[in-house]
Image (cartoon, rainbow, N blue to C red):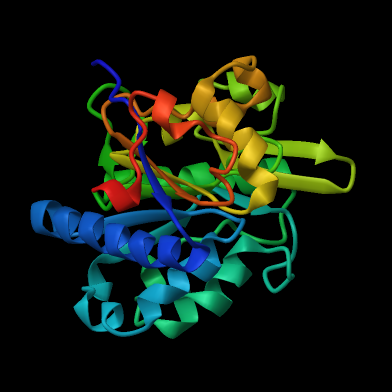
Length: 265
């Protein structure tokens, strides 16, 4: 199936971005619940947990059918569960503990394991969710088809733990892989086939430190493996970029055919 071109939404401020992201998550969730009776949301690191805190406040918290939500992670550092660098712990502090999600519907990466064991364990857990039909199977691959994956653009042009020029970018058989960025940092990540099998993928770019990788990714002038965000192109789903004015400060929007500003819609 032909890939759908990305949509770009640019906002004047980071707070405006967060409010519109909350609206978008709610919209996708309502559609998924209406269609299938459940909603699968995949979180990542960066500022995603903080931004989702918007959903714990009025009016969102009263509008959401929280019992229908199932939460997963696109990446996780190999650290103890309550470690400050744990993306699960960050999400719990800013979002999960503030909304009435069912504990059984929160699916973190298992702590206390090696990176390889954690990756294998998480892939097995996701496969079980497919068996129970909590998560759909992609129409074009055997990968899980999550309803919405939220990613944050890193200053190096990466998303999740898919780092520039890393061998994990070529992984095609595993759904979850372990990644060593350096000797002191190990993580597990969903691989590109899984991310690109999602029904909806959103990438958030915020702050001046993402201005250069955001422009390079949008314009596509750099080698694709050096900017892994360029490799996120859902096969039969939607890709929407949410960027604030700082992240988009170097990007010549008027010259980009599919660029759209939030203020223009």
